[in-house]
Amino acid sequence: MSLALLLLPGRLWRRRGGSGRFEPEAPAESEDVSEAPAADACGSVELQYWNPFTGPDGPLMGEMVEAFNAEHENINVVMTTQSEYYTQLGTAAASNTLPDVAIVHADQVATQAFRKHPAPH
Image (cartoon, rainbow, N blue to C red):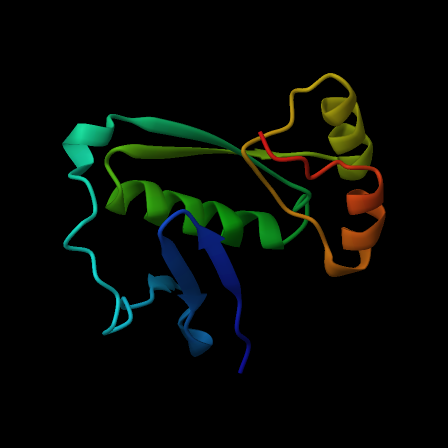
C-alpha cells in the first residue's frame, strides 16, 4: 500500500490506499479551534507553490491542490511545476522571489539549507 502526504496550511492530506484520491485527515481530538479567527476576518490568501513534479507525480499533486482549494474558499494555492527546479529555486533566492511553499527533496535539504534557499519571508 502506498502512502503520500502533503502538508498545506492547516490541513494534512493523505492518499488513501488504492483509491488514488487524496482525503483530508480529521483534526486531532485535542485540537482546539475555538480561538481560531473566523475565516472572513482573515481575508483571502494566495500562496505560490512550486514543485519539480514534471512526471507522473504532477497530476496527483494537482489533484491535492485542487481539493485543498475547493475546501478552503479563502485560500488559493497556485501551483507551478518547474523544470530545472533547483536552478529555479537558486535564481529565485538570489532575486528574493522565492515562492510561499516549495518542495525540497530529502536528499537536497542540507544543500538547500546551506545555500539558504528555503529562507523564511
